[in-house]
Image (cartoon, rainbow, N blue to C red; front, side, top):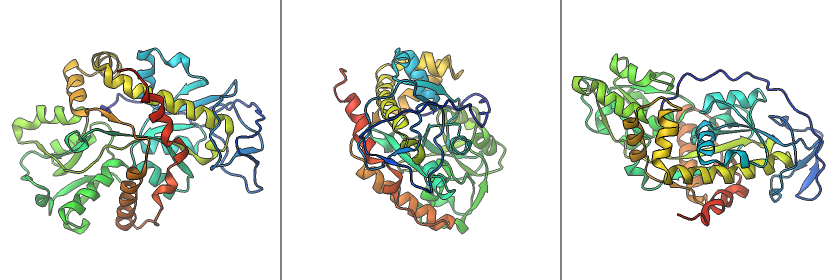
Length: 369
């Protein structure tokens, strides 16, 4: 589902208290930690001492008692609450009220998060900043070109009717986030270079982009979710508008650090969470009114009209068991970002832990409609 502009979020305190608990596991590809070690296991509970799960070993399927997982995925948390599934999680969940790349990366670095929900760009930039991360769940949209997350918002009085009209315009740009990568991809599609436009670096949080458009700080900005509807409703009469970008912008991922996956208890808990995450996405799709009432209205403070609009434009979720196409698209994005931002080349496949590819799809395969 498209995520609406959230209310002011609480600042996540770095350094959540760590609960120690030594869990001795046999089998499951466990090996002694090498002398260099790796980044410490985040979150709390369920540690495996000096034994690590090899990254090519089968995922453990039993979550040891006392395992804790710290999760930054507020929308899924609410879906699990509304569906009555949250108390069935086979581990202790600590919910962090954060989402998005910068917050998630900061929490990973602080040792305060085990798994987070983001789009496709944060794992790339996390890797470039020295974090060792892996994507463990992937969701897309059915018919994504007709159900995009973003549209290009056009400031009142600015004439942009097609991508070719972007030449010479001031465009809001957020490096390291999905909106920033989308801008680069749009320029590529239009046959334009960065030098053909003026990129104005602005954070893409809250109402920053719509306000920048309304105030003519920028001519163009990618806006998503309920901000599209509200921008047109508020500034359409003054000439504000939107145009489609015509590109896929639908990736939604769960990702974690390699060190977390090397902890057998955490790996088992993450596998279980991915299953519940998938069922939650299916529940959202099949219970639109409950989702509108419980999440958009009561949790996010939106109107019911906003909620109905978001459900309509979001379409239906696609949770594939085969990530080959997703990895190929991710490689194209990596190559573009590396070239345009002067970053080292990465192999997109290295960002995905393919052991998890069938986990979500299998969890919903036999769910009754």
